[in-house]
Image (cartoon, rainbow, N blue to C red; front, side, top):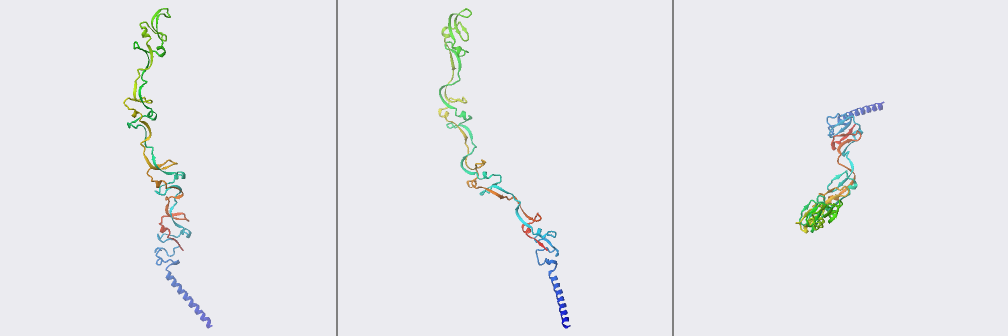
Amino acid sequence: METAKSMKGMTLALLLLMVAFAGCLGEDNDGADGLDSESDPDLDPDLDPAFSGCYNSITHAADANMSAAECEAYGYYENYGATVTNLCYNTVNHWSDANLSETECVAYEYVENHTLSDGQDICYNMVSHAVSGDDETGCVAYGFLENFTMSDGSDLCYNMATHATTGDNESNCASYMYLENYTMSDNSSFTGCYNAGTHATDANASLAECESFAYYENYGATVFTGCYNSVTHASDANMSQAECEGYGYHVNYGATVTNLCYNTVNHWSDANLSQTECVAYEYVENHTLSDGQDICYNMVAHIPSGDTKAACEAYSYIE
């Protein structure tokens, strides 16, 4: 009996001790589920000690409806959604173009002493340094003539005795003859000058006059010494032979001669690029452009937030 009483007393004492210890634990924790804003400076002092959900220790945003999977799915992504493309890139001046093909990109070459097409096509005299408006055909048609009979005369029937001219052609001009007591077709007798081609008669013309008709081509033409153009028919009697023979046609005369970077495929060129820059083009495949956004994104809920990187990494789930 004494032993049983002793055991009951010990059991009662143990129960009282356990109750007292539990009371001490409740006072030290100062809230349910172990939330103590005084011992954890990252917690919002106004946060309900009984809160369970997603909490941000920097912004103090709290969401009791968010699951642990969603809360832990925040991540900060730099240049998110950026374009991935192939492009032509210059490793020296950092120029790039996503529209150039690989063939075009590798076709740049540096050309020294290249003649641009900024000159003029002109007819130029290397002696007098004069410029004429002749095209290429006219420019090469200049020639120096000495005592040359020009074609500025007339073709005519001329009488060397009377110095008269007629409108006869060459055949009729050679048809004049002197007749004496000639019986004409009307049975009349005729003495005088007769044209067998035109049947013209002149009873007053003497034998000498009648036989003096002759046909002359280019009669009265100029005898010319000087520079003459056989295409334009321009002439200059005051020009020397040296000047006349000094004409030459020059294509792209006075054009700029420069060094430049040239693309042999699309024919683009730039005289301002250095040789170092010109040979620095390279084709880059699957290049990520800088056209994306730096965002805090939830990979489970698929929603972005406006958080900074530090705030984006400060989400944690509290139970």
